[in-house]
Image (spheres, helix red, strand yellow):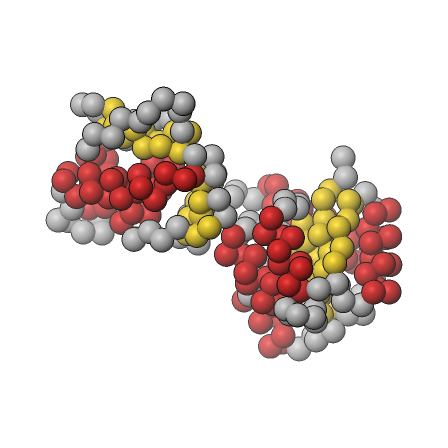
Length: 232
């Protein structure tokens, strides 16, 4: 099966050559020459790997990269640029690039780097977990609902991480208190109810629900057809 690749390159001749070569290497390539358009496509479509030129019109590649990273933290992205100074490489990697290739380059090296990115994305443990339209990046300490960043306090995020670690398993209030206790020994059972109540409201559009299992604790699961139990 072909690998879905997105290419953003403003040099039309190079873009056409890359699209042809990558297609022959069993990549299914979508290509644009504009940064703003690239961002919109990347935010609303799924790809397995991205090749992104830095010098794009309307929005430069680094800005595209930073925006995409806020919504798709695990998407493998390789940037292309004619600038090969140390500061340029650092800027690209700091913006969120997984790899960096300076022009001019050999196609064989680009293909090898793409294969390596794909291997790493499939082999390395992922810090990103998804349930319904809710996505949590533990390493980045961020969560999204329908690709929109969620505004969570540090404690709300910790409660969400605990629930996401126990999908379809009941988590007791005491377990949550124990996790939060390392941050603040004064956290009590009543505070947990407040955090869960706030989380419920914020997670409502995400297709997931925090159910109260009376006498036991909380259960995070995909939104059922029936109404949720909203006690506590």
